[in-house]
Length: 493
Image (cartoon, rainbow, N blue to C red):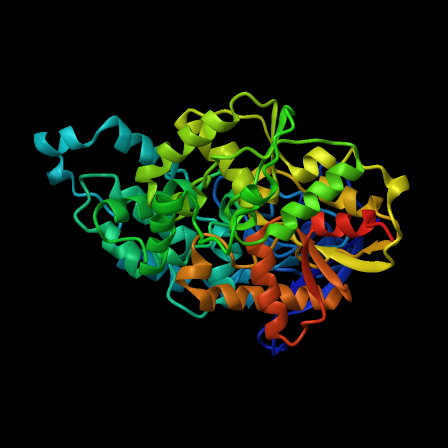
């Protein structure tokens, strides 16, 4: 038997939606829609939900499953699952009113003019344009992406969200379209996406909206002189001058350690650790030494290019990739201690011809830690999944396994550990108000766990979450890199 929580709302008797718990027998391959039908049959509950094809093709049964968009006919039911309507006005139970978004789409006049399909335009309908439209045109209008997008959910600001951006990108690629879709995308908040990747994660058709639509439109905006935001220009200027996206605060970490042990394992420091957060690099050295591991920290490495790719300033990315590939090509393993760097090296650099063997530090350390040397910490922690670690690299279990290995650490999972904190996609620099709102939402979840610290593997998440905690007057809760926690465990009296 499993318990399932379903949102109920009847406007004739309820002032707002509320959750009701139902206990049912779970059958093999049971989906959410099957569970709703079982509840209705067992309890005569009369839960209202839209459904049609039951094959993941019509998109009519879109719901929220534990806070994330999903299709009721495709999502496996789980014990303790929370089933809610999408983030639209609720008509009854799980049925919502989508008329507002449907009107927005109608106003965009998303159609092609066949009369424009002449010889000149036919030449412009290139294989590349066709390829770009194919990447984003299999949408089934389920609105899972829109219902899940953290900016759409929490920010009261003009942002069309992934659903609208996907449409605009699709039509921008087609010369038969009559409108300036790039200008429309800028008006719809093109630079308000955090690049968290949640839209792709919940899409039943696996459409990579943030990469193939939003980041592509940002790239076009930069090429046409309409982007990026003024705050993003500093990233590129710093990289052009120093090879790093942020300015150095004194000698860099690499300059200080000058570490060349002849190891076949190398550290990709990333801009934040090299120029700002030296203590994280120092902590890593301590942890590795405690476990008898030596690494090289090569000089001449530069920014991975993530800030440029995310903001559309891609014209010098190839140069950065080539420089880093030359530095690291002879190493067996390249370690990262920043989720964004790791995701970029793994997912973006191969497109530019570099295929290094990159491992996040949690992947590397999870089976190498000598727990007998650890101190008992007697502390309670929770874990934040960086978007570029959990969704970008598929790494979720290893950091939690490490936390479980540290003596005296009590681990408490927060409600939505993979909810974006707002630090990515150029948001922290370009729209700090969005970054702060999402950081405070994350901070409230952290506070609810009763943890003394929130652990992560992303310097940008660490900074932004700490800002959120401070903003809700919880300066006593500290955001830490997992390497810092391990350093405490191995610290000698």
